[in-house]
Structure formats: structure tokens, C-alpha cells
Length: 164
Image 1 (cartoon, rainbow, N blue to C red):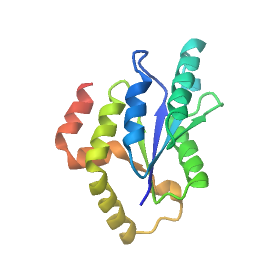
Image 2 (cartoon, one colour):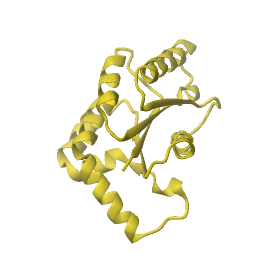
Image 3 (tube, rainbow, N blue to C red):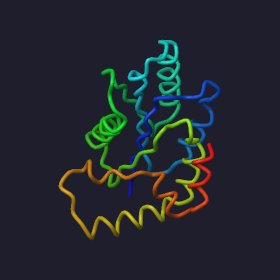
């Protein structure tokens, strides 16, 4: 069963290297990643926009299971950026489940991906159980928060995420 994970990038630490992402993405089995560049809604300088865009494309070039979606419109809300990624994954891949990881200054994406890998089977089981109980008409309503599931299965992660 395949899962799609959307990661929206609005902010990124300049010290973040591509090797950490590439190593994780290449080890992830049966998971497609969509990196959404939503940096256009910030009023930061243009160099940061180019930095994020270049970083995401370098990662995608080195990983078969990663795609990049650039949000060209300015002032796009975070939820809309998640929808862009969900629509892209839904139209290009046959995925059973779509989740997202919020990129914020309080959350380390690499740590979140590591926890996701640990709890991936638990998350899949929970999603299968929920899907059989209720049917939602729109695939967008089935998009889940990876962070919420990790906190559900690992109570310590919630305090770890808040301390960042």
C-alpha cells in the first residue's frame, strides 16, 4: 500500500543540507513525497526563494520518489499549498493515503520523518480502520496530518515538537 507525503516549505534553515533529506527519501519504501515550495507568500528577499527552490530540486534530482511543486501565486495560505501537493500526488500516482508534514521553525522535518518511519505501519492500520468506518466524498478530506499521528503513537514527540 502506497502513501503520499506532502511537505510544504515556507521557511528553511540555511544550514539544512540536502544529504539528510536524500538519505531519508531514498530509504523510504512505498512512499511518494511531494515537496511544495510555498515560499512566495513571504516577504523575504528573493535570494531565500531561490535557495529553497534550488534545494528542493537538488533533492528531487537525487531521489526517484520525490517531486517538487512550486506555488507561483503570492499570498497562498498553508492549507492551499497542501491542497496543491495533494492534487498533484492524486493526479500522478495511485496512492491509497495522503498525509502532510507542516514545515515550521518549531519542528525538525528530519526528526518527524524518522518518527514517521517508525510508526508507518501503525498509521496505515489506523487509516485503514478509519476508512472502513466512514466514506468521505472528496479525497482532500482524507489528507491526514503526519505530525498528529506521530503524537498519537508517541506522546513524547508532542513535547519535543513544542520545544523546538
